[in-house]
Length: 199
Image: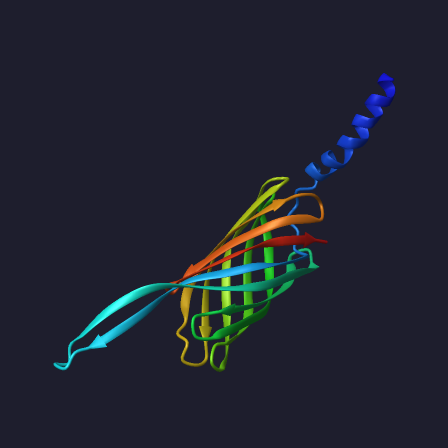
């Protein structure tokens, strides 16, 4: 009886110990989920004498995003994402594709740089590019964080600006995890949360 009990315990613990030993940073994954935004809208009211008053209101928007990446070499990966959101008076679409370089600077810590082609559709489509750099780290077999600073610019009337990207991933097992991220800059904040499948 004791031998059977010990065998059952060993079989139950083996997948967990194998998962715990495999806390490497993966660059091949697919995720999708909710994307929400908070942004500022500034309104000016002009007076007959030429003066004006200005008010800023905080608005929200809801939508979704699909993202993915694929490792193509030990230190390189390609990535892309697509998102759509419903704002107060219009709908928007945004997608980007790019290539990233990851370099280990410590056990389970990577220096990460990315460059991408961006396309945004608000009223009309605008083409642009973005570049970002930062750090990605596995703090434990089940918990990962990343922080990136970036710059995004478009060829049309949309002004270029700096932004920040901070995210976490909670790994449920080798395959599944929950991913969350906050992007902030240019008077706007975006929030993403959804499941991730790693390959």
